[in-house]
Image 1 (cartoon, rainbow, N blue to C red):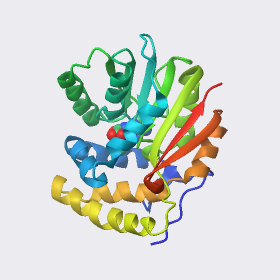
Image 2: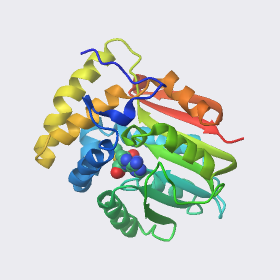
Image 3: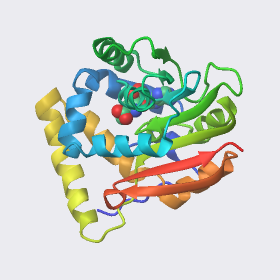
Image 4: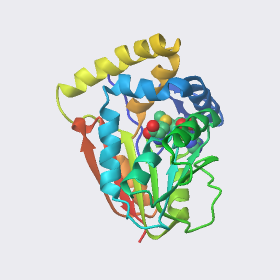
Length: 258
Ligand SMILES: C[S@@+](CC[C@H](N)C(=O)[O-])C[C@H]1O[C@@H](n2cnc3c(N)ncnc32)[C@H](O)[C@@H]1O
């Protein structure tokens, strides 16, 4: 299957997977997906990625290297069920404060329960809001993270400029996202797995394969590593770079507000 990825010029705001939708429609379709999958989201992540998402998330937090001092604040956008925030608080030896922001109350409800069970409620708060319009004043956070979230946001340039705005000078931006597989053969295996197996596993586990077809299609449409790096630079970030994981199945982009 040959799919045209969206470029830095945009187009993600009207693509719901491979379907074209009206500009105002994408967000509510995406919200339906995550309301449907929230309760099985964590299990599905393990099944879909064979547990790899855990290694990629660990690598993200290792690159972030949160300081082991109190007062350091991170905003985890599209933070869903809390995976990134929990790892950051652990890596800071319980010193960091994390705000998990997500547009979807069902995903946040799962996150809140998990935080309570882990005894991390004191370090983490949960905010229901849109990545395109963050309810925080300028220069509030030391770091901004977003994992497997940005491709779901209709206006990526707005999310990036909001990230830049709420970071303190010297603040760090890190984005983990599915990307373009850069290894011959692996790309074919990955394509077969994503388009055939993932929607089927989704149907078996959640009773509905459609949300997973959207997730797979949205991955195939997302700008590749270089184009996404240009978008981050365009939002004002400096020293933008990226690392590939698992041959480019996932990529971690980094930038600094200098
Ligand atoms: C694939 S999940 C990622 C969750 C978590 N970061 C992780 O890595 O497991 C994508 C999340 O993006 C959220 N999302 C989608 N559009 C959003 C928006 N405009 N603003 C904030 N969150 C959004 C969804 O509700 C969902 O929880």
